Image 1 (spheres, helix red, strand yellow):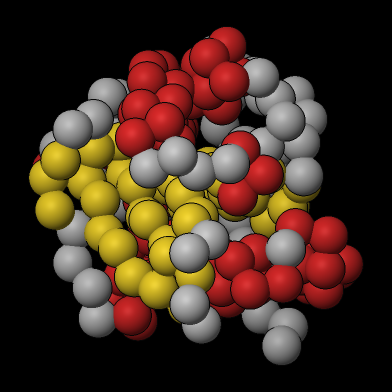
Image 2: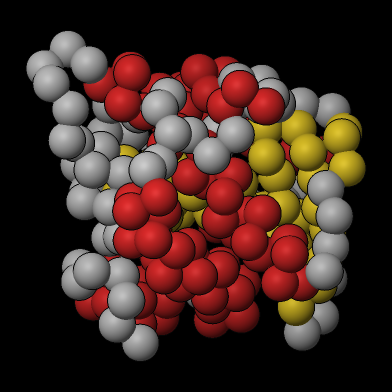
Length: 195
């Protein structure tokens, strides 16, 4: 059976819940809710399992904290013997406005500590979905921004993008990265609410 690893980046613990840096967790939580599956606390992360048309899908929310995300990703890839081409990592991105996203087949870490650590351990040849959290913060305040919570208005902008993120995960598993990029990247540049 083909296996896929979908990783949402974030920090564990109630104090980080629904912070901008935890947007990856939020996408996986939405996926799990829609699929009626629950996360279990396992080694290096919370894991939920499901299958899509005969393909086994592992959802991973690392508990390593953001800067050591690569430890969890590498462990679960190896443990389940999942090919790197079937890895999708979902992260927040200050370079994109809230409600926008970008799907890429590979590339640099863009200064993101979680992606940076994954890259150190497995290279940069893996798919990633970057969810915009905006960069509306004073100079020198990036850490406060990414560790801050979304305002109700921001969450409203984010919700359509999270829903699309769930669709993107399904498409990645069923159709592959290239078809999924072609289909969804044009949607991701708008306000996130186009169907």
